[in-house]
Image 1: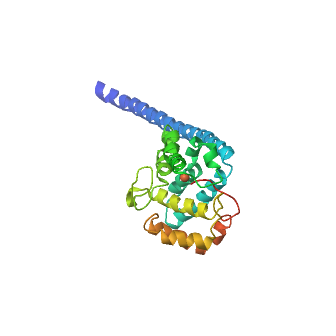
Image 2: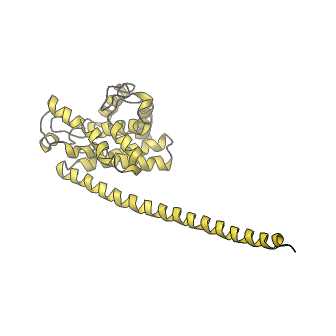
Image 3: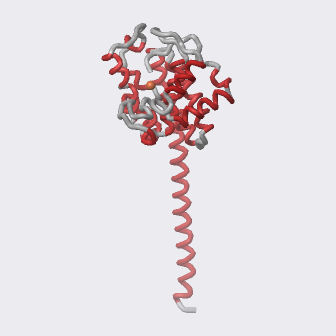
Length: 242
Ligand SMILES: [Fe+2]
């Protein structure tokens, strides 16, 4: 037996042990990172939700509105074949979509009359403001995009960026329909709530201009097959500016 045939199996053995150990440590690190990320995400979401509660104090119906939008939008997303992960993302976006209202003056949010041009300008900043507030939370990047786009219109006449059709994320196009339906079927200080039938007519009338026709179609289908989902819409409550 020469030296090489003696040392080679030993070197192979120790190299194998070393490589195995490194792989084990790396896997453990990745696993710990995943657990930590989940933990961190959950805690950050709690912090962010407390911000939503803060707006709720300013405008106590925002949370109710956000809950309704979340319920309608996620049901539509399911009908349209979203994955579970995308539905979860949409859920967060709906819950936080009006977070930017924290920067809108209280007197505007609760104004009992129609808003003037200046006041509307301030309200219209809320989708951008919400996105700016949440931008530092990188794990919410896709959610932030949906929040920024939830008042964009299919025909490009929305805000803040005036983007149109497929340039708007499908999730945001769904949010726009769910948001408008809930806003229309709830009373505002300066107008009565529309009935569900009237709100449906509005959706149909604005399909292809304000709203994505495919989303309106899915929404109307859902109203037919799961009317119980919409039993809370149209309650005698006011929702402030969109
Ligand atoms: Fe909004």
